[in-house]
Length: 230
Image 1: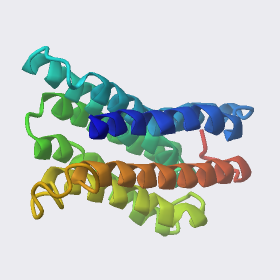
Image 2: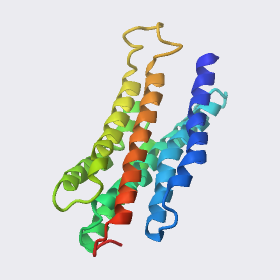
Image 3: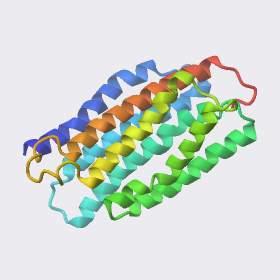
Image 4: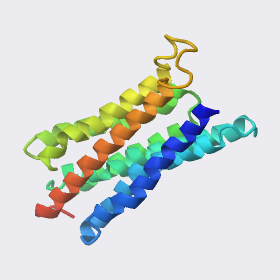
């Protein structure tokens, strides 16, 4: 009962903290950044909402279809983080590119995200659910390369956090899928320090890195003037 209660309460704490603190520090007064501010709220909030709903109803005896629906809700929250949550980074990276180039990159990323959503909602195994985000992740790696070139934008101080937000989340997903460390110590970490606990902690870290990177990029876009900027 205790592990279930902890799993249920753990996602609720970030939800309350985000709602009480983050909206107050976003640049709502700047019309060109308000959409990205909403994207950021959704990106850092929805994974916890999906996880909260999943853990709240996971023990109901409603059959495999109901449980699969809960998994889809959980994956939808992760998808919002990977798609809308990445928008501030993508907008900042392409901020000073020609308008047609910038629009093409953003549109292509949106198409990859939609494809990833379809794969996420139809996946039947933990690895399938994680690999559905591979295409958007590869594109974000390409945007990392653009970001460090003379053509890319974004706050240089945010670059490390941009990388860590993906690396940490991928590591957490891999630990969850591989069931580390309980597969090495069966029965010894059922209460704590199991893969599910570790994954949740790493998600907290990944969301923190996303938040720091986004705030720095939003501040950077509010200062920099580019002729190509939308």
